[in-house]
Length: 172
Length: 150
Image (cartoon, rainbow over all chains, first blue to last red; front, side, top):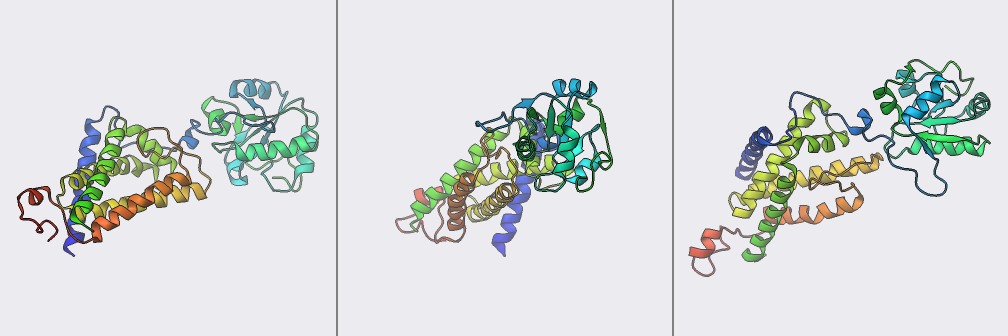
């Protein structure tokens, strides 16, 4: 019991010391401001370069935004359906890895010379998986969006919310 | 365990924690971001938690090195290490790609990082429950054979 009491005192003393040290730190953690994960700010999402011979080439947000505005690229959101519905690139289709609806999405994308896939992961894993599926179905020019949706938002790229109205049965 | 060895374990553990705290202190904002990446706490609590973790590292490190309230400090250290192992494991199991934030650098979290924490957790447990206690003053002033007694 004495040991636990002492340990509690040590923990409390440490906490107070930490708050004091934070006040003296050249770059303190701002106590009143929530600290966001990098993936939520676009700082860490899908930033890793494509690796390996089978990796999908990347496309930057400014380049993709220009193609979006000119409607010369089709966009595919590879995140969960609820994330898509909360907000996505305007006119983007939804296709998550392992979910049905591929035929309809491929049919809609066939007329575009370029397809851009994005997700919300640091390693672009979901986007890579969907991009591979699309390439296997014959779409020739497929790229993964660097920075993904958070970076698109941060850059002020056009976005909307709601379910995928362009997707047919099976795809959301 | 011989008092000398026990003291060495405590001092080494304390030195590691002092070093870990010292590497984080210059940029606690960056450590808060590292901590947020684990997605274990509400974002509003993360900055205070980051400062608290570093402060506890600092205090337990100093106490372990000095041999003062060493069992209590080792118990807190063990708790902290258990939290680190749990945090790293849940992040790895959830597929979160992140820097571990261990020593203020850009080391990526991996199962190797978890494996590195486990011996330290064992050392902290030995320091809490192992026999004997080392206080530097006693070693110097106590007669031979008295250093290991409580």
